[in-house]
Length: 398
Ligand SMILES: Cc1cc2nc3c(=O)[nH]c(=O)nc-3n(C[C@H](O)[C@H](O)[C@H](O)COP(=O)(O)OP(=O)(O)OC[C@H]3O[C@@H](n4cnc5c(N)ncnc54)[C@H](O)[C@@H]3O)c2cc1C
Image 1 (cartoon, rainbow, N blue to C red):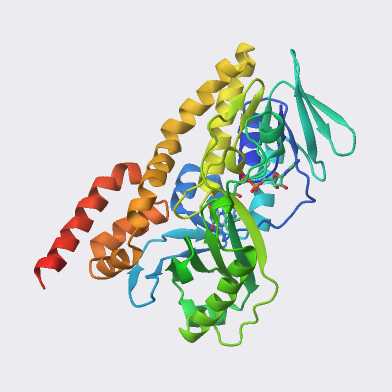
Image 2 (cartoon, helix red, strand yellow; image 1 turned 180 degrees about the vertical axis):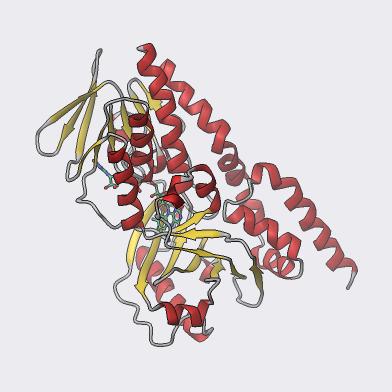
């Protein structure tokens, strides 16, 4: 078994497959530990589903609430809880930690090995590496990120233009300064539709780091704003945060980094001897851009399906199609509904934040869904009825 890409999706798949007793080769093109563009915010459901993440010390700190600001900055919703609403990680450490867990379970890990091409033969799959070597495997997991070569070369995705763009920076900061600005509760900030972008700005305080970013979760093809424009928005964002006394006045912006993310799942995430996991399959929360939960969950699901396939000697796409059925039923329902309802709920963000700032219950449900803590599939009616209740209450009290 070969897993291409050692991000959260690949390492999770490798770990679970090795635990089931299969020989697993985990490859990555980068030298590990490697950085990865990310906000580093984990929904709590990652910790509930993958208990070892907390037990193995991969969490840096927790956030117990935060603020959601309206586009005009006139309204803000504040929520503080006694329980964490999100866990914070440093991707370099987190991803390497997951790789080490896969190795502990028996996987062989090789970094600086880039998969260039894949050929599906009658009795095996052959991966061609950039150094000219070949790797043969019964089944291949393509967990090689948003611009997945495995997805492209196996015909599951054309060169992807449907990606969203983010800019971010993770600043090293003393815990005393972080305590002063964000409290021990490490309260986060989200700025909805910041300066008109189709996305949001985020401020994620961690134990000794501050992650600030902006992201547009919409196709680059439809983006009227150029990349330069997004960098202007980032610069303005830093100034807005300074003016609002949200971050220290003397914070130096430094070199801002960029990253891409998928905006919706591929139509088909399997073919003969191939399964796609994580960003390679396009699994992302289309509202928040959060993808680690889906990456790890799809890795876990893929491991289960592949174990069955290898035991039964069925590696064709007909058998592997059960992977898609399982993820669609697992987290796919939420992604689908989020995709459908995004337009409706983001149409009037200003009004939504204004109403939520006056009704804690509405704020609670909305933030829970945004953070991925509550399933939109289960909470959609509650959100809608509460929104309508607050809307009409406001209307009639005028
Ligand atoms: C700026 C930004 C902020 C984000 N913030 C958050 C957040 O706060 N919370 C959250 O949950 N999600 C966030 N995301 C999304 C999250 O980073 C991804 O959904 C997640 O990393 C997907 O995991 P993955 O394992 O599928 O892919 P990746 O983490 O991208 O890992 C893919 C791996 O494949 C390797 N690879 C690529 N090509 C090849 C090749 N040809 N051969 C071998 N190896 C290859 C890469 O080196 C990489 O290590 C953010 C994304 C961006 C861009």
